[in-house]
Length: 142
Image 1 (cartoon, rainbow, N blue to C red):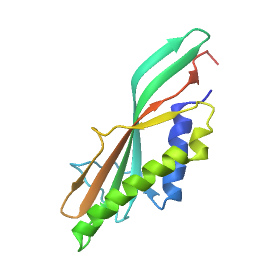
Image 2 (cartoon, one colour):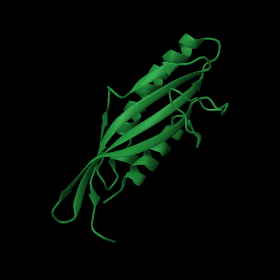
Image 3 (cartoon, helix red, strand yellow):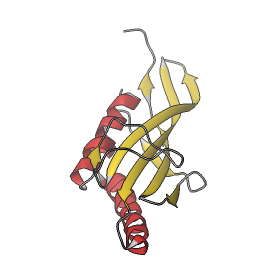
């Protein structure tokens, strides 16, 4: 079985393939990145529920948040539209990515519409795409 680490790494790989750049800097709707990189992203995950079954099988559900920062240049409306287009591209890619669906953890990704949002700030567009990840893992001691 797999782990959330495997799922996050597979999502990171897909984001880079789509032309985004991963950065270590933490940013959100209240703190923009100092980096000058356009289409920068970072990923956060947190456990929502951990269900356990006989045979040491665990079926956790995690929150997976992809934060994206766009440099808002002169045409701020175009940047906002780019964020919307990219959201659909990312959703489609993650749902269809063999590198994710083929993981041993058999992850089921679901878009969390209530938590996904975007905010246009003076020099940035910040987008948060939130997913629920329902997957399987071996909970036996290694």
